[in-house]
Amino acid sequence: MFPFAPKKPPPPPRERLMEVAGRQLPLTVRENARATRLTLRIAAGGRGLAVTVPPGTRSGEIDRFVDRHQGWLEERLKELPARPMLRPGVKVPIRGVPHLIAHAPENRGLATIVAGEKGPEIHVHGERPHLPRRLADYLKREAKKDIGRLVDKHAAAVGKTVASISFKDTVSRWGSCTADGKLAFSWRIMMAPPAIIDYLVAHEVAHLVHMNHGPKFWALCEKLCPRTKEARAWLKRNGTALQAIGF
Image 1 (tube, rainbow, N blue to C red):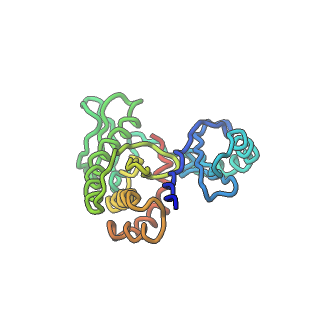
Image 2 (image 1 turned 90 degrees about the horizontal axis):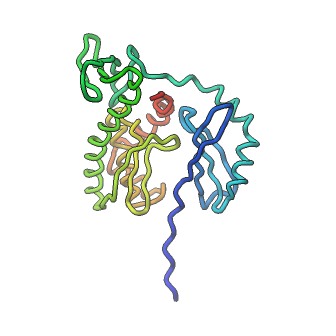
Image 3 (image 1 turned 30 degrees about the horizontal axis):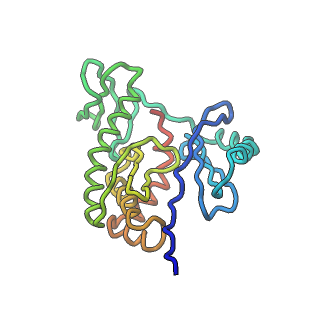
């Protein structure tokens, strides 16, 4: 008998821009072998669109499907709250703790955490128009430190090697793991409490062993992170708000 051919991993998501209600939004197209029809959803915070399609679906069919749902999309996008923009005087969560934003153009570097009279502050350096981007860069830098350490810990626990770690501002997911061991994370997770960050890393590292969401996967996830259920519930309640913040 001939041996079974190894199961091919799904192709990577395709991404492009699409105009909806006068706005250019990123559209993520993901093939799913179990999908029997096209499904459309708005990504967390209204920052993009995600379409799940059966394998081999043509681009033209996807375009026509999205066009047919323009009215639905416009109504749903109107219901979403305005994206809060980061500026001096408002607070941004860092590792789950609200930090008051202050502009400190005289200093050098990205940002500095300072103990203020009413709680922690983050002093952002450089020119005022660059403040949101510098805050994002600060979170990316912190993500590389924290998540890199957690990946090492959890990967050692499952006896797997990680090929690479990357950080993105994704609109449809908090993290991903490929069949060849490449992990990716949204740097926005650094606004969540440490326990939530730990869960996200444990989740993606568990995919190095089980490339699915079956019972064995969740059992391993909970072994790596005993607070898995609590963290999943937290992300479900609060993830949209973190995704909606405008950097």
